[in-house]
Amino acid sequence: MGLQASSMSAPPEADRSANSPGGLEYGVSFQLPLHQPVMLREVLEWLRPGSGKIIADCTLGTGGHAVAILKEIGPSGLLVGLDRDSEVIEVAKGFLSQVSNPFRLFHADYADLGQILQELGIEGVDGLLLDLGVSSYQLGIPERGFSFQLEGPLDMRMDRTSGLTAAEMLRRLKEEELARIFWEYGEERWSRRIARAIKAHLRKATLDTTTQLASLIERVVPGRRGRIHPATRVFQALRIAVNRELQGLEVFLSTAYKFLKPGARMVVISFHSLEDRIVKRAFMEGFKKGLYMLLTRKPIRPSQEEVSKNPRSRSAKLRTVERL
Ligand SMILES: C[S@@+](CC[C@H](N)C(=O)[O-])C[C@H]1O[C@@H](n2cnc3c(N)ncnc32)[C@H](O)[C@@H]1O
Image 1 (cartoon, rainbow, N blue to C red):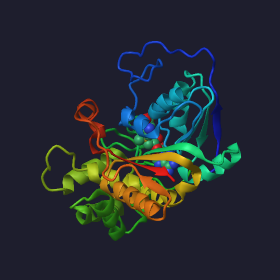
Image 2 (cartoon, rainbow, N blue to C red):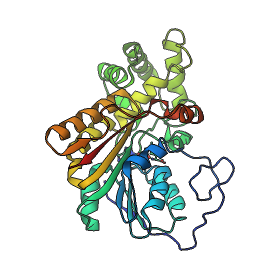
Image 3 (cartoon, rainbow, N blue to C red):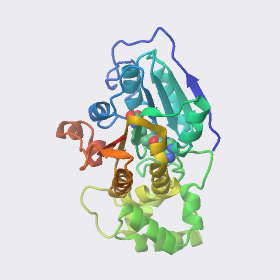
Image 4 (cartoon, helix red, strand yellow):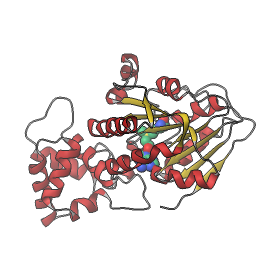
């Protein structure tokens, strides 16, 4: 993927006034209720983005955490923001531009962080944030195909400039491979039955939209389990597979220490057990090699208050290390 610098610094006359109704408390004004940054207070507490610090937000999203960090680092700091989704970067840029402190944004996978820091002439950062998964903003756009509740193409790529779409993956992978994905990444107990039904359907017809897939799953899964829609797990599994989320995370975490100055902190928020296991293992390995001090032996969870205000935060687990 090509790296693309999206923006530098901000206009001096930032609007720091009121939040719009339904907006988040970013301290900047905007119109839409967007992705609500998860465990924002805890992120700031552990990352400690003080004056003059260089912080890399490697999963920028629409900039919820990044705006708060940008305010903390002041005019002598630098926020480096990366996202593999060019559309969210544009949204984040709008918010960040309302804070008059320096930032640089890149349309890039976090795997490319080393190359980006090299281009910027930065040897190490003081803090690094990974807030994994998709944002509510991406989920809410029907054309992105992440949501089974919104009619749209079965795309699910975070970076729409490369890779297979979910629809292509359903066509190309064998039934057993699909079943494995649904089972491993979604813990879907009807994985084989669903994979079989998808392949049978594809022999006679097309399967190109979110709602087509959701209703096919509804038809083949017996009964409805509790409050969660029967398509939830398959959609999660497909998204993880399409974006190769777990492989990318594992590789990145094995080299991330190189980007941290001594005393720098890395904060990772994960949203399901497979991700958390990878984070836990990578941090433990770094600890054993004498690279990190473990700041959280057990993951930190969002407060009850946050979960009731933002149900999406309920599965969040935050882990953090300090570079020795
Ligand atoms: C949960 S959202 C981040 C939300 C953000 N912290 C906020 O408060 O607005 C995760 C973001 O990470 C991005 N992302 C996921 N995997 C990535 C990767 N390998 N490299 C770069 N960005 C990635 C997604 O496109 C998404 O925008």
